[in-house]
Length: 166
Image 1 (spheres, rainbow, N blue to C red):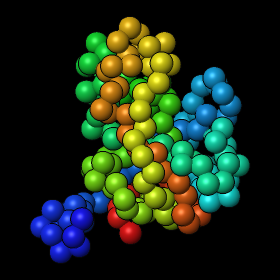
Image 2 (cartoon, rainbow, N blue to C red; image 1 turned 135 degrees about the vertical axis):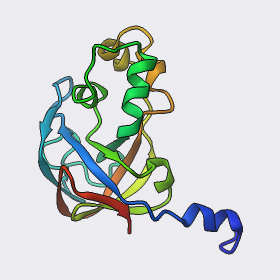
Image 3 (cartoon, helix red, strand yellow; image 1 turned 180 degrees about the vertical axis):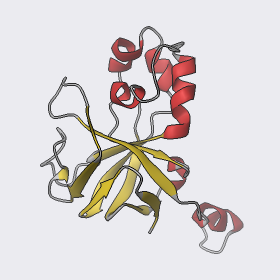
């Protein structure tokens, strides 16, 4: 895309600053998510304590999901019995972010607290969503699954920290 095109300028304009709402790690395959108040990441280790830790270069070192999408997912799954505090762990994402459109981070590096991450792709739902949310859970998450990222610069972050484009 031409660097001076109006569309390129629109795509590069992201002054909003988001906020970390929830952090979770999954220590091992099939294990439940553990909720944290703070964590740290590094390019070599990924997210401290997560099952993807120790996999340098993985495009899925960290997963993020949009806080504003949680009520939509619950509604689409017809799960009014699931609290918004419980839902991130069921969705198996590492960081819940509010206030900034995660899809607008495509092709960008962004800061989460003291760490710098880079968008690597969409975080598509898997078949485990059927078990977590019930029949139709997979389709409830489609289009709302968040993004994957890799760690560019090590750093610490916590609930309440800012999220924004570098």
